Image (cartoon, rainbow, N blue to C red; front, top):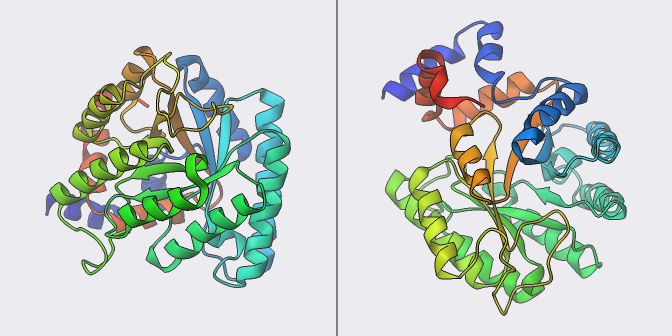
Length: 322
């Protein structure tokens, strides 16, 4: 209730206040801002995934903007020799407006990324596009474009079946970011209690590792991270160890030994630095763009539990240095 109250108050605050709240979680409004943040954080041993803010669009002209902007991002990554890949929202490329054109736009970007040996992650949006997003990955792999993977959300009932089906389709080329999921989906299709979501996220991480997939463990939840570390030990996986799983694929450029830890910009910085010091590959999700306000408001509306994070950042900023 307190968290929801804080969010409700924040939503009614002036734009400048929302900007203040979001500045530790959003790199800025321009690519230049994102480059500056990456230059600062790469000294801490982090690698990155870059997200141009904005998703569901109203016209295919907007989709062209995102395609062009991501090409600029790729060029900046290459120019600055960043250890980075791309995160994209399929709906920002037109998937809900014109499925064929949306697929064409995504394929164009993935093909260009492949020329730089760069990976592209399809972010998972709400349940309306879960099946379509997974299908895009499968279709691109069928065309020989294996530098693409998706996100699977622990809270969704369907996730274990998705791990199975994708594993059958593309085997050790499967590459997931496993997270709890921020979208508050209906209880008919998703777990809604905090304990259930945590448990199912842990199960998804284990299952994906069992299937030989590359797994981005994307969580700021200490119990989930601790569980993941124990599972990695069980599989005899860890820093500076070649992936020992018989069903895993060949080592991948810009990837860890079968897994990595991923965290949002500005969240759990001390935990990320500790994991990096232990030798684990850690990746920071760097969002930027003119849609910073809409992104911030959406995250607040879709997940009111963020309210406590806002309060902590405001009252005890020293506990959560970016």
